[in-house]
Image (cartoon, rainbow, N blue to C red):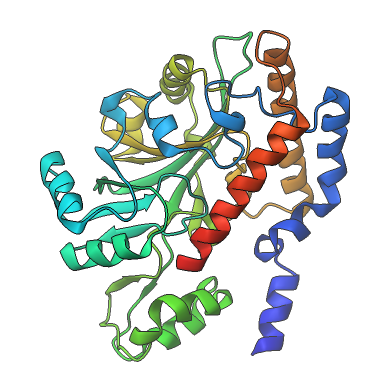
Amino acid sequence: MRIRKFFERLFNWELWNFYLLYAPIAPVWFWYCFKSKAFWFFTPSNPTITFGGFEGESKREMYNLLPADVIPQTIYIKPGIPVSELQQKIKDAGLEYPFVAKPDVGMKGILFRIIEDEANLVKYHERIPVRYLVQTKIEYPIEISIFYYRFPWQKTGIVSGFIEKELLQVKGDGTSSLKQLIDKHPRAKHRQEEMELRHSHRFDRIIPAGEIFYLSFAGNHNRGAKFINLKNQIDESLVNVFDELSNKTHFYYGRYDIKTASIEDLKQGKNFAILEYNGAGAEPNHIYDCRMTLLRAYKTILHHWKVLFEISRYNAQHGYPYWTYKRGRKYLRAARLHFKKLEKFD
């Protein structure tokens, strides 16, 4: 079984470690650093977001830039406050269970949780070591990602990627245990350590026939979500929605994560909520789950890096200077320490 899994990972580049996947094209990234004469060449790409939105940016910072009607109702909680104060904040905000909790500064779905009741909330609050947010659980049925970029000298941008997300899940057959279903799942079986950490106490449970059991509620590729390519749905009306949003926020490059009632509603600019958006560090995740060859995936990534470089260079020449090496190193080191702390409690 282990040998079989090894060869499945070896011949499926989508399962490769991040650093292994990007190592062959890393010299191109460093060429842009050299060409810009700035190690953090991407920092002016999104001038209204710290570090260009590459890593370590606050969700609060992003939400404050967006219209209130397109984001979930959200409150921010300091770690360690008395439970009674926490409960009062939630009551005052009118939030009802179930709702979402996640770190204000987070990544890769770390410590993302659906809070079902007060016991869940108290357990989460006592565990998390950093400021976090509590927000309405958006019930729209469709979760999607939009990769958008716009050159600052142009009014109209480009939607280069459009995908629908299917959360990591198994479907019961009435006879197999959860552990057996995980072992047969094409993606979950490669995530044994994570599955044991989250679900080992339920491994023996028989999942009824037809019942969907969610293994993760985070719609990230690194959390096992499946992506369905919707590139044929990209049209002028979709671009117009994100032109309007991005012009308001001076957002030039990155990815929106959204829930919506339908694709048509999204194109009409209604019945959708932005869960978050990611800037310069956003991966063009439409390379996954669409039968791309590795060569074509590299071509897509390199195209986006070139766009990132050109946007950043223009903004640097028009009032938004590159971060110094010292400033960027200090910021990134603090962000990495923050994420290591989160991983210990995930």
